[in-house]
Structure formats: C-alpha cells, structure tokens
Length: 489
Image 1 (cartoon, rainbow, N blue to C red):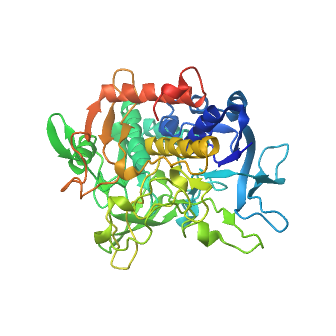
Image 2 (cartoon, rainbow, N blue to C red; image 1 turned 90 degrees about the horizontal axis):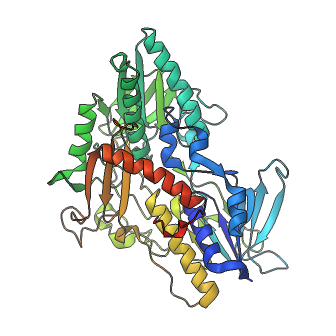
Image 3 (cartoon, rainbow, N blue to C red; image 1 turned 45 degrees about the vertical axis):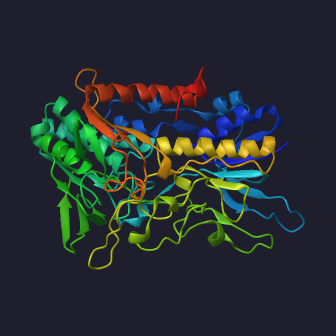
C-alpha cells in the first residue's frame, strides 16, 4: 500500500486529495494534513465582508467529508520534511504538529511514498508595520483573507455606515498593503462591493472611497494586463478598469508600496520615488504572501531547506529559475509537472509552488524598492494544477514509476474569473472574464501574448448570477456531493 500525504486542504490541496482518493480507492492511503477544521470558499469572503453572506455560507467541516472519501485527516500543521528519512531509517517522513483541541501541540512523524505541498501562503501582514492582523486583528486595517477576517471586516464596515447615517463622513481605502502583493482581484471585488452596499444603504454621498495598489496601471491584476473582446471590440483591461472606477466615482493611487500603517493613516512610496500619505476611517489592504515556513532536513539532521524551497518559502518545482532579466522571460520558464527537481516523489501545487518570476514587468522606485504584483496562482489554476498533480502521482502508484507526468502549465492554460462588483438579485453586477493563456506567450501570440479569440470580458447582472451559481456549485463539489467529479475546476 502506498501513502500519499497532502499538506494543505485549500482549493488545490482539497482537489488533489479528493481526486486521488477517488482514483486510488481503498488499496492505497491518502492523508490530508491541514491546521484548519473547516474548508473555506475564499472567493466569497468578500460577500461576508459586507454582510451579504455569513461565515456559515462559505465554510463547512472537513472531517465528515474526508471520512466519506476514505481520506485520513490530520488537523495539524506541517513543520518539517525529511526526504531521506533519518538515522536508522531511509523512509521519507514529514513532521506535523496537531492544532485540534484534543492533541494541540503534540507532534507526529508521518511516513510517505509521495508528498504534495499545497500549504498555500502565509499571510505576511508583518511585512508592513502596522498592517496588523492576527493578534492585532483590526488594530489599523481589516482583511477578507479568511472567513473570520471577513466577519470582523463586516462588523467594522457596519460601524462606518451607522456613523454616516448620523452625519459623519467616512473615508474608505481599499487595495494592497505592500509593494509585492498579489490578489489584487480580491481587493478589486471588495472595493466595488463596499461602494455598492453604501449606495444601497443610502449613504454613498457621505463616503470618500479610494483605491491604492502596487500595480503600475489599473487592470494589471498581476498578469501584466490583457486585451480582451468586450461588446464586439478589443479592449485593454486598463481601459476596462479605469472606466469602471470612473463610473463608480472611485479615484486611485497606483504604483504604490505601502510601507507603514498607523491609526487612520497609511504611508507609501510611489514608483516615481515620491512619498505620500493617505488618511482613512476604514481600510482593507491585502497583505503580501510568503511560504508557510516549512523546513527540510537531511538524514543526518542538517538543514536542506534552501535545496527544496526558494527564498520566499515556496517549493521549487520544474521551473526555470535562472531566466534572468525581464527581456529573457519566456512562457516556457513556467512549470509543467510541478515536480520537485531534487526529490521526484515530491510535488507542489496552488500557491505553494515557487513561480520562476513575476508575470507583470518588474519595476522599482529610484530608491530600489520593488513595486509590482507577484503572480497569482489561485482559483481555477489552483484546482487544475492540483488535479493534474494528483493524476500524475496516481498513475505512478497504479501503473509504475515510469508513468509520464501530467502537464498543466499556466503558459498553456486558460482561466475564467468572475469578479463581483456588487451583490443583488436584480441590481448585482460582476465582470466575467476569460484569459488564455494565463502566462502570456509572446512567441506564439505576438503583440498581446494571448489569444484574443479566447480572452474576453463583459460586466453586468448576468455576471453576478454566474458568480452566485459558481459559489454554490463549487461548495457542492468540495463536499463531494452527487456528480462532483463532473464539475470542472
């Protein structure tokens, strides 16, 4: 019997584990190690953050789902990987530390035949002084990165609405909280849901709403922007985004590295080298991501973390990490199989894999501060990669170690994104966009880097309903309900 251990139970890890259990059956073991007791459909946290959904609408208990699937579930966090075993044993293992109330703090060594790192990111709030979430939740800013964060954000948001109803004007600042952030899309959705809810509450005229982002232009989204078909025309995401911000009366600050947050004020540095300050009464700023801090050790106990992980803490895979300057970047730099180059039975998927470089053109201020989006690896790509990695491992377990690995390069992958701009049965809106490929290939598609026949976008009520339906569809899938394997990633 072979044992596959999946570290992480988010979108990518959950997808990999559940498909692996489906394909392997009872003849082999799938183990999921995750510190969380609940699964969270993160794209809907933005609705929790404005009171349009409850925490219970976006989460569910993992234990009964994994029991149904025949998956061994460990509510714990991975601490270290030992890919050569230890003195006296050659068997690979991972050390975990339990987080459930019955075993909290206890450790265990889990042997594995194959390992998938799907730990996702560490929300690195500490990278920006004063951004403060966790033990200092809400000290200066709020977050929608987790369901609990989003509940707190809504609580603070409702306070602002009450103040406005009592005649007190409020300033809202939404965006990214560091020069190297990703997930601009989540902040993009949240700012427009904030604007929509303020309009519904009749206090929009009492609100000043502003966007702040590390993007060099609106609509970059960490993918270098895109050109898409919209209403029969070819439109750049820059024009698309600027039009929406202008229509909703939201000014913007771009190319900004937020370097400090104080009570009611952020300090930032711009790409042109100038410094600025912005006051706020309510602010939601996305933090930068980092690896979760997994360590790796050789058989003799020596630290080999740098061999397996990139400096940012994400796991090295079959990517070209030596591409060098922006002018040398190619679509082929991006990983295809997500196999670790040193240990062939280890893979990474979702946010946990180390990208070879950003997708957007890297930029720095005159002082040398990097300011630009890091590449997104969430949502649809995470699910696709998780499933492909699971298929590769299952084939090697069932058919032999020489079985070819499945490929799922983001440079040969399309993705769909539905970005909410306000929730409502009749007045909701969302921007529904597709992009192909996610990583532009300028050799194959000169000029734009993408196939404009498969890259398009529209905004309207239909988009909102698509997002609402997808919310229920993906939770159905994650709960392994009837027909779940037929629902695409």
